[in-house]
Image 1 (cartoon, rainbow, N blue to C red):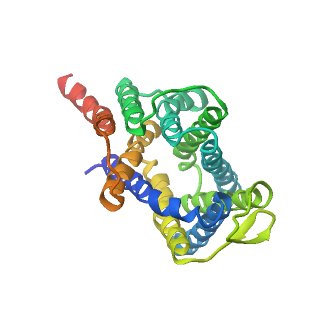
Image 2 (cartoon, helix red, strand yellow; image 1 turned 30 degrees about the vertical axis):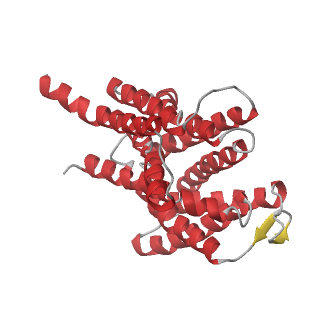
Length: 300
């Protein structure tokens, strides 16, 4: 099995791990505000990643710190703009527009790094994006504040995936990921203090930064830190050494599919026929990206 194929299989598990955390995160942000939760999530992730990295040879350089900080900025941008967008528009609309990063990544790779993307990958991305439209249940699209914020979110995620694919070849992977987590934690703390409101049942530490310890919150922090952050983003960074950013983002469209399946199994959430059709289209888009080049190569 080639390193490229192994990397893409690993990215499938990353997408599944993100989909699996939707339910515990929804429960957690009922206890404390979003940025306070993100701070704890990425603080724990930073500590865990650093301790793990000590065994494997972490080496901080000027490049790894600079690149990691920039990736952390992009990652935080995706989380924060998506969160604020949910205040102004439907979650289904946010889910669909966020999926635009499938189309944005190939253009970013060409504009910034002059990397060309195969037509089969672009076509597969379009099919997956149509599938995401059906899966999200979005019925209309008006360009209001919520939609604009979500577009910025999609651009942030697209920049994160695109630049990760380049920076992973230029710096120590352990330092890159650790710095990325630390930057996201720091920005989350700043936004929690200055731009968040307190819940009535929480204890405010400073400004809008709050803490409230219960079993559900601790479970969500540990689960998202270990599985959806340390495991997921480290594997993503490692895998992007051997596959393209365009393929990576296409595989990540499996995230809402896995979230839907897990929601059905654990929370009795029912998928409608259009949503099931959308999930099938997403899988078809990934198959087009993976299988079509092999068929073309065999034919030639």
